[in-house]
Amino acid sequence: MTSSTSFTSKAIFVFATGLVLLFGCAAARKDVSGAPPTLNPLQIQPVSPDRAETVRSPRDKIKNKNAYRSSIAVLPLENLSGTVAPLKEIRESLIEELVARGFDVLGERPLEEFMERNRMRYVGGIDGTTATAFKRETGAGSILITSLEFYSDMIPPKIALTSRLVSTDQSPVILWMDSVGLAGDDSPGFLDLGLIENPIVLRDKALRSLTHSLAGNLAGKPAQESPEGKRNKFRPKFIYRSPSFDPRARHTVAVIPFFNESTRKYAGEIMQLHLVLEMAKAGNINVIEPGVVRKEFLALRIIMEGGISLAQSDLVWDTLDADLLLTGKVIDYQDYQGSEGAPVVDFSLQVIQRKGREVGWSSKSYNSGMDGVYFFDLGRERTASAMASEMARVVRGMMWK
Image (cartoon, rainbow, N blue to C red; front, side, top):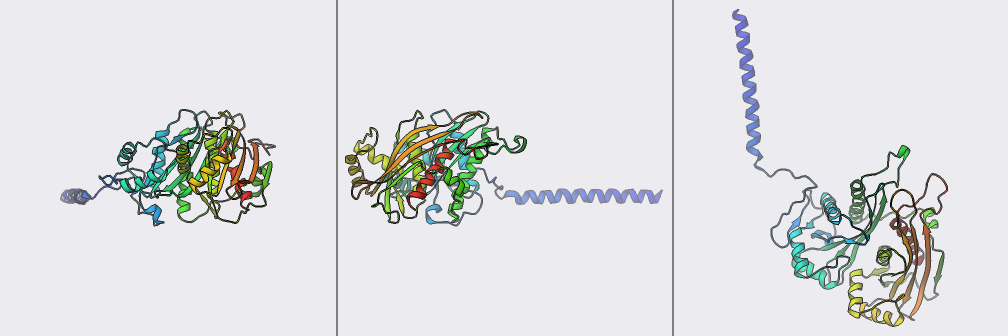
């Protein structure tokens, strides 16, 4: 009996000691928890209350070029889709992706105050005056301009975006640019296991692609070129090159909005963006920011009826100090909703040389999403954006070869 009582007393003592140690450790942990809590990498946190307030990633800042060390002003999306779309939600997700990758993003308050103070309404481009005002008033080192080309939340959903990062200099420089066009049934796979039916999932996939491209550009990783078979598929149907056109010389190029003959609203602006994107990839080309081109066209009151005339070209050359003008026409630009259909892109372009005032390059491109598709939908294109991107890429490669 004494032995049993002794054993019970020891057990109670051990149990009580354990409780004391347990709560003591918990209390100790609680005492040191006065440090700031760990942030979720996707959580947007303003860290500066002044006008240069920025949204910072909790991770260490990426060591990069000077242009990227300051905060990025992410403008509201330009809607070129011609339809109602969740622009605010797309932009918020874009900011989350940027923050997660370690970029500093200008806070909402200073951005809104700047746009209101400077009466900034157009968000599809930036001119030199506005760019330098951004740097002076907010401290932003660059501006992210994003255009929504196409959006459909029907099953399978579709989305197309073009985004570019522009410096806040008197002569804004395009630091990076890329586009993405995705459909939920791009890669359905076996038994449609790869089919994406949720438009939010597809949206986030597209935004990850863009921010991955931006981060890769920062790290000096060039974008991969299309395979030879795909380049042959999207070759222009007709090309002309003047003997005086020198693809090896250095050029300053102004890409102006294409004249739109299609039924698709904003097709001229969309095609302009695809050509700006590709021209910016050529090493010997300086592409003028589209926002600067737009401002000068408005100042000169140039209205193109069927295209730009030589008299108008003289004004643009003198004002923009460009030696090449790239312009063209969009004859057809079609997307489709749902699972049945085929996009169509049909455009022509010309490069007008300041020297000699003549056409240095001319080409005509036409493709359907079903071109080269013979079985199992292999090689089928499901968005006009993805197809226009490839067509512009092939033209650029042939033009400057």
